[in-house]
Image (cartoon, rainbow, N blue to C red; front, side, top):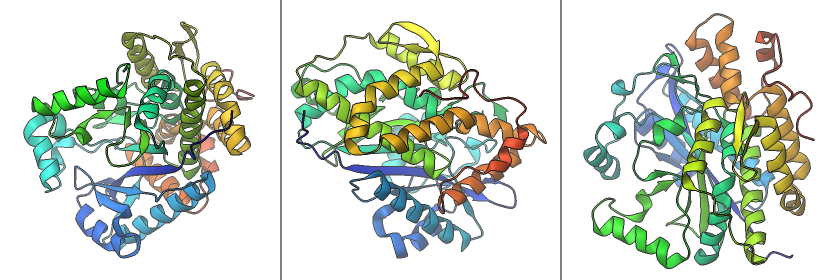
Length: 395
């Protein structure tokens, strides 16, 4: 059926600030932001720690616009960081930097988070990507969210990019998910029957001083309090521009698909929250390298199979937007060549040095500002394909 929504796009990315002499995080966010704002204005902002910096695209209507804007933002932040002898890297965690050596950004909002959440806030050295999709009607957006919340696990697996933490391999493809999930207002939202129930919960949390305001709800998918959008917050920041475009295209297609379900009067499946949490955990733990949980079929299935089902579910919306060839091609590329976690581990294999991982991520982040392509030299570290059965992808 024809859509009355435009499904506009906006993307936020959080970057690590890196000292290229040591490959460690460095606390130069204020200096880099001020320099970058000379060209980017408010499209670049501070984050909770001074070793982090965030960018945001303007409102986009196509993946081509998203790609061009992210390339511009990355390039400008890299140029600003270089003025202070620093660089940036796009990865969900830093492989070896220690959280207790990071400095809080001296803004009231972030200092309040440390005051209220203590150790959880101090350990917040993680980096995500948030995709906004324009939905003008919040009641409609909530019903879309009820559907979309059951399809986020494949996104986690495809974009998993945080295998290392504080000098150790965590065993996770996306360690950011369980690390972030310790916050009481993070993770998956529940099912809401209507907007009154949704707003009632946010009001109750605010009135009981559990949160200061509704913007401090950090669910994996939420109605934005600042913009007329649905915001999907579940993915690690992607190293390459191609991966960021892939994730953006998948998120928009998911919202578009769920919009059609709502408009056709199809209710969201009553999938238990406990099952969805396990599905997210398995996607974070195994990424593309193990069996994931298909909550709709209620069975375990290899990651490439679940992603094939995900693409099949999204195909009409991707085709309607003219994005099918690009997004399905990027998904196939990721299945062949590995997500960020797989490639980080390959970078480590040659010399067993985590510094090599940071250098690889830094190089690929910079390359993404030009072309978004993955450095082919990384594949010399491989002796076998990254995912069994994924050589030909889901098509």
